[in-house]
Image (tube, rainbow, N blue to C red):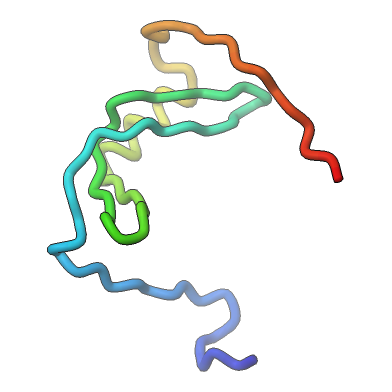
Length: 85
């Protein structure tokens, strides 16, 4: 199906201002075989979809933490499951 957009083009989504809330969220990422959890991350969150949007400064700080910047506040153990058919 032809979307009328060039292949690989990003679809821009317009969010209404009244559907966005400032919140502190938990950001989780896998990097170099490690699961990294970052708590209390400031974000704009769409109350309709749950999509999270971060400021450029917040993204830079997340990247610094993932690259090994600083000592974690705490360490947790978590079970890992295989998703098998």
